[in-house]
Amino acid sequence: MKHILATIIGLIVASFTVYLFESLISQQLFPLPAEAQPMDMEWLKNNLDRIPIGAKIMVIVAHFLGIVMGMFIAGLISKTSMVPAYIVGGFMLLATIFNVIMLPKELWFSSVDILLAVVGLLIGKSLAKRQLRI
Image (cartoon, rainbow, N blue to C red; front, side, top):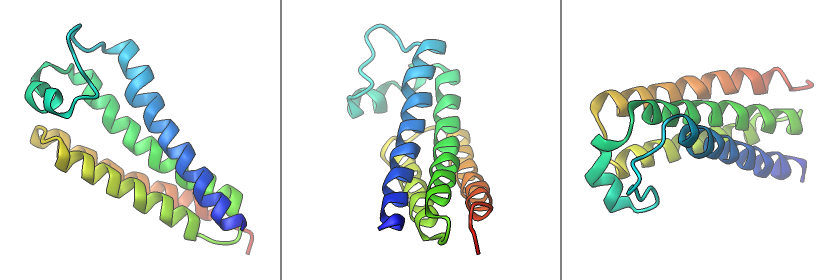
């Protein structure tokens, strides 16, 4: 039961971290154009060039930190197994890859986003492993 809870809370923390950086902080620092429709995939696909570069960088930071934080929290709660952290990290990595596929972006963005997601997975693994009591 503890591992299920660790996985669920890890996913919630990871998702909230992504939301916090991608939506709340990014929107304050790098506002989208007034007519932007960020929840409309077609608008995003057709107007990616109008999104500020800072907002794109914040998306990459959000994905990276979401993976790290989610895996860390899963490890912190689980204390005896890496499985919850691996599930959280794997799910968030797949979500990042899915995001890159669904919204075709510049090559630099896609490459850095996936690369930093993998780095986040490795850092998250290390942080989660430190929480284990073996």
